[in-house]
Image 1 (tube, helix red, strand yellow):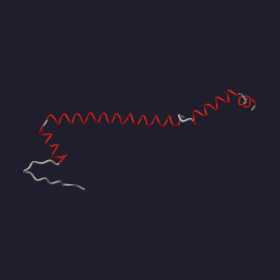
Image 2 (cartoon, one colour):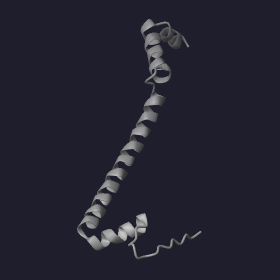
Image 3 (cartoon, rainbow, N blue to C red):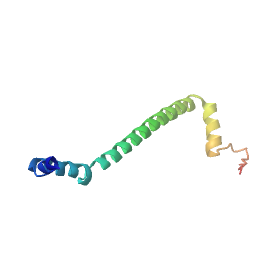
Image 4 (spheres, rainbow, N blue to C red):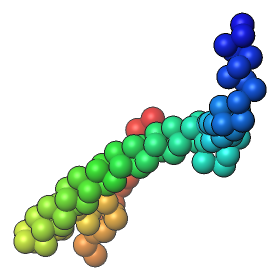
Length: 95
């Protein structure tokens, strides 16, 4: 008990403990916020990777569409419901 009282009366020990308590729990850059920000950064890096893969996939599809006129016509008919003047277009919607 005397050792505990001896250390608690020392100014440097008290100041160090106060500083650690302040930095871990009270400061705006505390440990909890740092962990939360690290998790958010990890999630954003995963999203970035997903969007880079999606971008590469779209580029490949675009190159395929621009190089093949038949595929481009098929894409336009299916996606944008384009038709020739002599055709009738019927859209079937499934539930």
